[in-house]
Image (cartoon, rainbow, N blue to C red; front, side):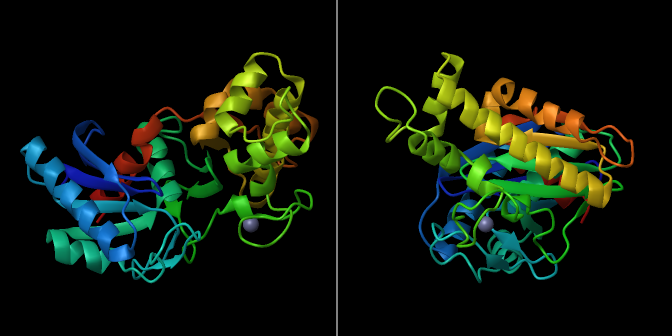
Length: 303
Ligand SMILES: [Zn+2]
């Protein structure tokens, strides 16, 4: 087992990616396709991508790991919850669905869990004892690596995007004041518009454009992104108080604006250090778009 490659799959809202990953973490082959609508169709496409990646890698794989959007039951492999944009996804059984389609042993986890396993196995927090993973994408995802292993709880452990205490804005989940209302790409765009940023009042400006404007010196854009850093810093302090994690890895599309987020994040940690006296090291993710597939493949190595 230890010498055989494994396959990893990243099932996201816009695309599905599969890769064959060597025991040392190298991607030997990969294949990507747009995400179709419906759970069974998503499984069909994902299984086909695994087959294509295995065929082009020209090596047998021992098992497959699936990192999927949504809350995934660690015991059964069933998708327990997902955002509204995933039609027919809740209730899909990833383990059975993949097992029957590929004939391989399957482990299924949340995509941010897989991202953190990737970064903890071969990336920015490799070799650390305990770390939190934060994915700042369209939404905000989180995951926990405790004492050298992924901690999943009943499937939603580490979901910091939906921690309360971050103002009063309505969250995508329907509740108010969650971290995601300040620190997601969607929220960055919304807040920039609310604050009337830019010569056009900020309407219809996406997060990547807010980032570009911040780099060009737009004060509202700079403030909105600093608010992200401050909010994430507060979330990190809560994680540190609860779990004493010494490392945090931050990834996702919004983390491309790292230089704009990091000063406010670090200032937050400096101003209110954990009662433990332990320092918290915050690192930017290094595996980029591969983190989830290689992390899922790393989970499969543990089967
Ligand atoms: Zn929420």
